[in-house]
Amino acid sequence: MRIFSKFVAALVIGTTLTTPVFAQDQPAKNVILLISDGAGINTWHAASYYRHGALGHEVYDDFDVKVFSSTHPLNTSNTPTKSAEGTVTFDPAELWKSEKSDSVFEGSLGNYPGYFTGYDYTRAYYTDSAAAATALASGVKTYNNAINWSNNDEKLKHIGEYVVESGRALGVVTSVQWSHATPAGFLAHNASRNEYAALGKEIVESGLATVVMGSGHPLFDNNGKAVEPKDEKAYRYVGGKDIWDKLKSGETAYKLIETKADFEALAAGSLDLDDKTKVIGTVQNNATTQFNRSGVGFGDKLENQPELATMTKAALNLISKDEDGFFLMVEGGAVDWAAHANNLPRIIEEQIEFNEAVEAAVKWIEENSSFDETMIIVTTDHGNGLLQGPDSDSKAYSDIINQGAGAMPLVRWNSDTHTRELVPVFAKGNGSDFFTKNAKPHDGLARYHVPAASQVYVDNTDIFRASAAALGITVDQKTN
Image 1 (cartoon, one colour):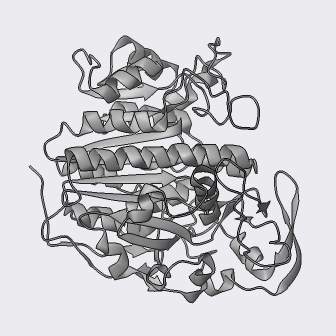
Image 2 (tube, rainbow, N blue to C red; image 1 turned 60 degrees about the vertical axis):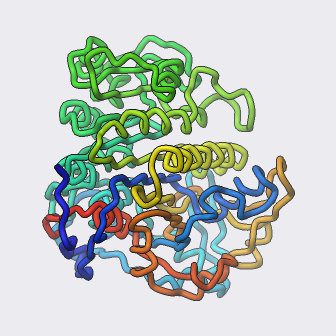
């Protein structure tokens, strides 16, 4: 039985007490959260320009709610500080300052001139994907590197645990390794995101999720070619060799699927699960489904990798069997990897694949559920690359230039790592008005040419609170 409550308890996030969040009178049955990792607003724009030749044609452009989100971490330590030392503050007005700067940002690919003080602010004190995933999944700001782990060095309860306790099913899908920061944030706990084997082991042994899908296959390389593992490290993304052997031999709660054909069969509802009711899908790639293949441009995709949309359909087919409902997180994880590489063709390719997964989720809602029953949220965990127009060296936050469908837009990369820019949030369905009710206005968002109603922002922790409130789940999170 699902357990509903009249309100979701207040949380302490860092040192700031949030207002109580009241659940829906008629809770949603399902929540679908889709995260394009590392996608600043111009990543979304670049993909739409290439795909459609204009903005406004993606399925999420028609959602009722279109706001923005802040993403900064609690602090930029890599370990718990157990103190307020180094707490990150955030003032969106600082993002838009256009005074000249002679600073130099030292990136991994090279140095990037500061150009403007607003850019300096945007590139400073940013979150990593672990702290961002923790905020999205647990509603708590924490230090960089933490997977549902507090700055007080304590385990945090994440939305997946609340969801399963409520009687619903949990699903997590990604285009990168399934023990990587974002998917792990909805499945596990660890003081360090880099403990991949421990995270993978917890994911499998806990049996919390009904379905987990992603890459990290120990027997395939970045090009989807079969290889012999060099050592035990090859198994780190799947929980270690012992866990992998148990998955292969059927000694866990999960049926292991690996081939594109099996993912497609699950999406079509025709896969024989034998005596299992849960699935771990590990695509035949050690890194990402497509991004890390040889070359740097479009075309010649690996043929043995399922599309993110197929994986989304497959997960929905399985978790929707739970009559009490579900929570599904889908990540376009390699968008972030492409931003780190300043690779415009492949960030567009990855974002388009993510957009197709959003379309698959919306189609499922329309055909199998309703927006009265299901809330969908589409967002990112942080920006990356500070992608701007080609003249953004002389004009702060200039627009990228559309060159029509099928043509690369004109851009300039101003970083090769994460940013703390305000990022898009799109939502629709039962509970989505949480965002508009709790958003704060900021006229700096007019720079993005969005309507006045969208010149507002929430915090990334509000993704968790909106999800819990929509599902009628009581939050008993220990404050940090």
